[in-house]
Amino acid sequence: MLSLALEKIDLSSSASSSSSSLLPRSDLLLRDPTEPDFLVKSFVMSGNQSGIKCPSEYVKLNIGGSLHYTTISTLRKHDTMLRAMFSGRMEVLTDSEGWILIDRCGKHFGTILNFLRDGTVPLPESTKEMAELLAEAKYYCISELAESCEQALQKKERETDPICRVPLITSQREEQLLIGSTTKPVVKLLVNRHNNKYSYTSNSDDNLLKNIELFDKMSLRFSGRVLFIKDVIGSSEICCWTFYGHGRKVAEVCCHSIVYTTDKKHTKVEFPEARIYEETLNILLYENRNGPDQELMQATSSRGAVSGAPACTSDEEEGKLRFADKNT
Image 1: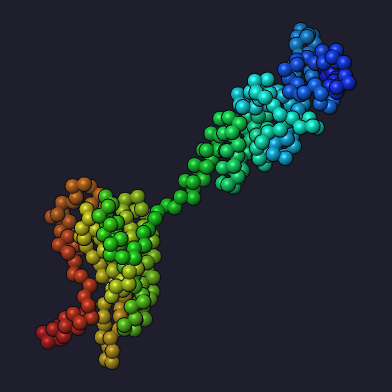
Image 2 (image 1 turned 60 degrees about the vertical axis):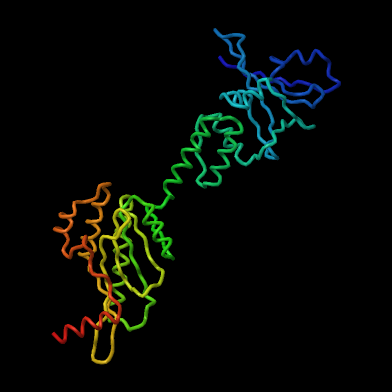
């Protein structure tokens, strides 16, 4: 049978010394005898465990201006700094109204108390608040709560970490540093729609977007195996894929050309999807430190990628080639 005995202890200066003897344990009071009255509750067990007391004295806590009521048994429940504070091993400061003062932010102290009571607690959704709770858990030496916060923060960091990163190079030096420093094969897409020397054909803008979309898809699919970089330096080229293995250029797919009409020249952008996929799959062979077999690469490349595909030609060279074709 469980009975609750409620005792009111007069700790004022006018009280006799005999009144303090009513306390079950003097080391649990954490009060100066000259301070005002406060209530002490204790459960008294009867029956086979007669005489055994399970103290649950109520205390008032002022945590940086945030006021909390709890019991000493809750504060002693886990092996924390609070157990040491409320076991008589550490000095405890109180104000004139009997509030025990702890110089910390009280924003998350309610969560701290709930964890001490239940052994578990819902963690904040916000990364900032979770980091704040982690700091408080470390201060109060609550290792289990601190570990839970750290694991949750790491999980959030992994969730927010991008699946892949595509460097945007703006200089030739940046390009050389990226290609020279990585051990992965490299796929570079050069895009320069601002080159408006000649008007574009009707399908050129759509094909340019298709090249960019394919680049984005492949950068997601092969991000762990291939380094994808985008070139926006602004050269005379318009749309060109370049493939690198072991730091050197092994293939190139130029997607633009100059076409001639009766009155003027036009810029034509194409979308050789099959060819781009082919060179991307070939470049995966350069994941191996020794590199691919050259004869195999030559045999599987439809346009001799290893020996070097024809580079993008300038406007003058394009004109000369077409003029030579007409004469022949």
